[in-house]
Image (cartoon, rainbow, N blue to C red; front, side, top):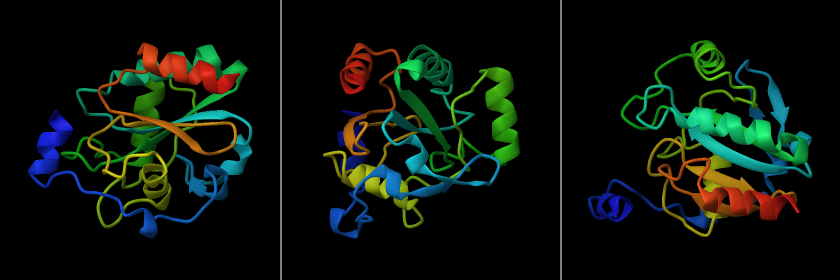
Length: 181
């Protein structure tokens, strides 16, 4: 309902799949981690990934707790959560990478991989997120912080979950467990 309303108001754009990176899998991307070091995402090859755009000053920020719980519970079974801070929605991620790292580790004990702040919509959208959107079966832009993309062991997008879908939602748990088999 909210997405439909925002779309009508012109707040949610579409991603043209033809302009998305033509990468075959998520493993073709290289991203900078929260410390600014390049990470080839092929280091996660064979794992199930939950890629999330995160923010520290959002009403949904407590989802960090659920994401960490998911990671703790399923990491030994092959799940890795990847957090990508983004400041695209009402300035809710204003901090530097160092401030974000400190916040996540002290407030939520985040131990899953965190990456440098990126843009997840608009003209400066990070190519990874353009690719995730274009390959998710939905070409509409990310609507808010804490959108989630589930990527299978083969590096391809399996599902996309909206920001309000909590990490412990049965739909997410079921999709993760199916992907891990």
